[in-house]
Length: 132
Ligand SMILES: CCCO[C@@H]1O[C@H](CO)[C@@H](O[C@@H]2O[C@H](CO)[C@H](O)[C@H](OCc3cn(Cc4cccc(C#CCN)c4)nn3)[C@H]2O)[C@H](O)[C@H]1NC(C)=O
Image (cartoon, rainbow, N blue to C red; front, side, top):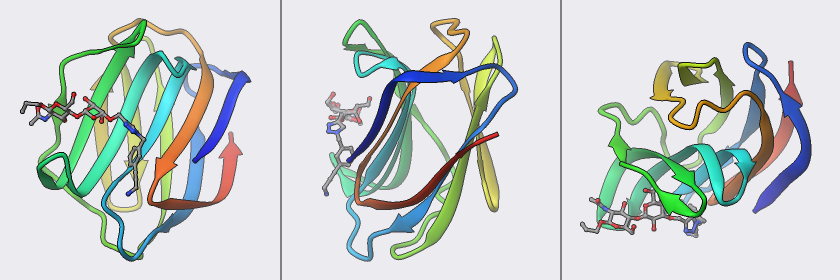
């Protein structure tokens, strides 16, 4: 897992680019952004085969340690072993996850005004993280 926490200050309109490689035997991985590990604007969790889900992206928020309502996306633009770049940005209404060939939206349920915490977990090898 790779965590950057507490010292980030990503504001609306700015983006976090996480570049890396999905492991060839990946079961799943997650990119979490928010205030800290208990307060997440977005838990972006592509599942190849875990928790009973196959090739499904599960998104959720977390408020004071309590998960919100899950949002399962229709598209699954990932394959084992893929190199990819995940760009996360947000505004007062929603978070946007831009991938090379897909884009997902998730409501900014907590009305967060900045991202101070980033964590990448699971079967994803981080090559670079850029803020722009
Ligand atoms: C049908 C009745 C029951 O319903 C199920 O109930 C489960 C428990 O609530 C939910 O699952 C939880 O869902 C939550 C989002 O909502 C979260 O993803 C949370 O995981 C947090 C978490 C993150 N990490 C780190 C990490 C991340 C990714 C990869 C790895 C790896 C690896 C090495 N191969 C490790 N560890 N734990 C998950 O447990 C299911 O979706 C839900 N299913 C449905 C259909 O509703």
